[in-house]
Length: 297
Image (cartoon, rainbow, N blue to C red; front, side, top):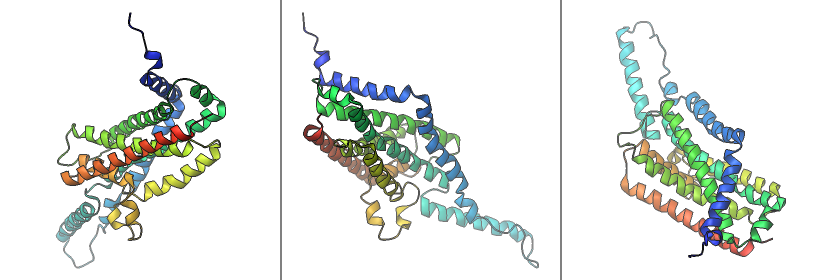
């Protein structure tokens, strides 16, 4: 009779630890709700309140005396056309909400993966990490279980936010098809893999949650605002643009917008995915090497 090696398989340990991380999430409905509500509030309130199209078309409803009333409609139509041209040249679409909603997908992934490093800190402080390190489970499996759980959580939350964006009026572009959503989630998977590995690598040696929180607060806003998630990088100051060009969120957001909003530029899309794949590979390997070196009792 063949011996059952499931209990000692690296994949078995990886799945068991990943499942443990996911249980802590989906068995806490309040935490799940809050992680979904936050980006939806940003998308619904900020996206709808920031009605840039209305600002550009906010013209007087009455004309000065002496101008024939029939010219009012002509003038308003001309201003509306000019507004749409400005929006299209600035954001690539005439609807800022659609532009911002796709940036919210990267926002969701960033803030979900950002908290993944805290899990190692608490496991170390509560003694669970020592118990796991006493088992035959490889150290890389410990790290990757937290990475995969964070990525799966972020993808589910991004799917909910994307569905809400369509309900709130997201306008897809001419090249959009449901199959493009595969590419959208592939780009989010890569950025989630890289970001989660990055944050967990920082936490490998940390024993204080204050240290991890300080790193999260230091990194999250530059990653979000020094990217194209909320505003085109071409309109940013010249000193900030080089930062946006190395920010992986810029490439993840550009890929999702091309697949949903814009006419697809295949060469740029390939470059986006290549950059994201390289980012994910570098920090995943870096995290695994750190786990071999520093993840100990």
